[in-house]
Image (tube, rainbow, N blue to C red; front, side, top):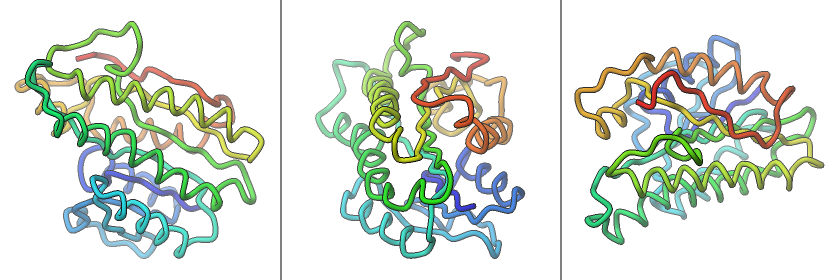
Length: 226
């Protein structure tokens, strides 16, 4: 089993590496700062990928395909957050948020399709946010972030429809508050009820089995928001 994880140098992404190594998977971990991962394992491959650079995204996808015959699980976890009042969001803020949170996973996933679903059902798990769920609580300062995560949620539904005949399932987990650096950036001083390892264990188990029960679903995973 080969698992590809983006945004793997910290928080939930880094804990996902540990989860899948413990489950005897071959893990390909992508990060713009792979030196920060500091995990040494025979079944771990680190790939440098700056998701702000689309050329780097395509090159990273090629490296993944060159190193494995089949991708069984893809977890699109990489994300960025801008916390500013709506009136102060710049074009650069908006473009960088959508580049990393929407455009990069869109094209990275596209490039890996021919390596998925070859021998058994592949599972794409997109990591969104409760801020990207229609009707959920919204918070001032997160207009660019939350709307980008809403786009990722809808993309998941589109992928499930397009790929359902290709032995590939896609689901989206919309996370509530977890004690990560990103949460601290958005809500300084707030103590979330879950830590990254707890959430990674949930995501990992869902990635392994969730496609048996779900396809094209946008699922809230939240105790607190925040």
